[in-house]
Image (cartoon, rainbow, N blue to C red):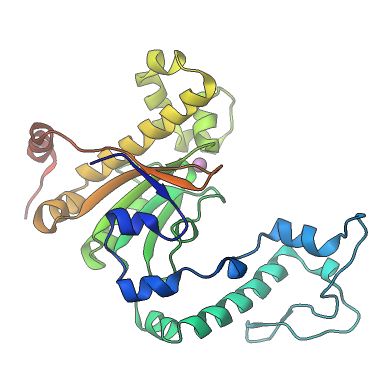
Length: 294
Ligand code: CO
């Protein structure tokens, strides 16, 4: 598989490697830039301060109210201001804008999603706030089944990830599994340092094993490259754990399920696919050791 450089917005990954979404839907899926979601932090900055740093509140007459049925609305409310909105209130308000815009652009989408899901991709990524899979791929609800944890670590005894994988592969019959690591990952940084963090040290143990197994090579690298190399090794390790999973192995053999290892650059939005192709001999050896049948 060739190393591919993929610009995230506009779902170029899908166009390049994963034929998951039909072309008709694709045209409708990328909203114009003016409709991109805001950041809570930018929202606060844009709306609370003018150029002199003085508070402004251009929408001061509007505040978010939550109805008793749990739905959000933006009714004008006297005596309240933008400054009083909590980040959660802003998020609910954004949800309201988002769902109305999307329903207008694609009137059938929510009706379709209300009936069920048939995602073609399982994404296994880091819990990091900068790596929201559906957003960085420029996709929509219904497109990606997802499991995220700290540092996108897969271990063969973790019931959580095993359940997600089994459901996605056996029942949803996803066609692709993407394991995504990312630059500037806190879990990777923690495993490359020696500070005691508590419970999380147990979770990060597989990363310390990787560090130990590759210590000479890692220590020879400058800090930034060392971190990126660990991200790369960790993605490959999680892909290897997937390949040894009996449900995944069977789907790869029986119906051509494809695995992908990718690294997302949080500083540029770019997604790069790793070459995870293997010699036939290695594949056969794995089958001998890990394939189980009824
Ligand atoms: Co991370």
